[in-house]
Image (cartoon, rainbow, N blue to C red):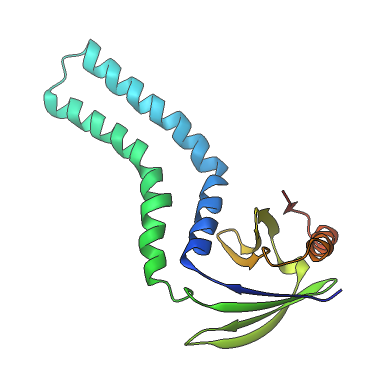
Length: 171
């Protein structure tokens, strides 16, 4: 099996990865879904049942707003500003997928590098619509554009990943 693919890291592609990554941060979302109502409830009870000064009441409300707005800042506004400055924007990555390893050829204005990696070096693989994320670190992944890949090649790649990795999400 030899499957070749070329992926350009566009702003939209990098934003999609950031959104995918944010949606899959289960621990953070659990903490926020417990913390937000708790902060709101405590602030409300303090305002209703005690004679708090206006300053303390405003601080409680500010904490609540911070708790609500933090995910929006971390996963919507911050990625957009960071992606504008990233050096990977516009980078072309050529992939060659085999039975138990894949090759990567990176080309941009500052770098030209070729490497081969065994699938077992990946932490996990996840497919999201027309993109495949090959995680090399919990926060970093290679992004593979699947939109131009044939169904047979997608199936062969899925099988190779499932054979060589423990964690594969293929939707």
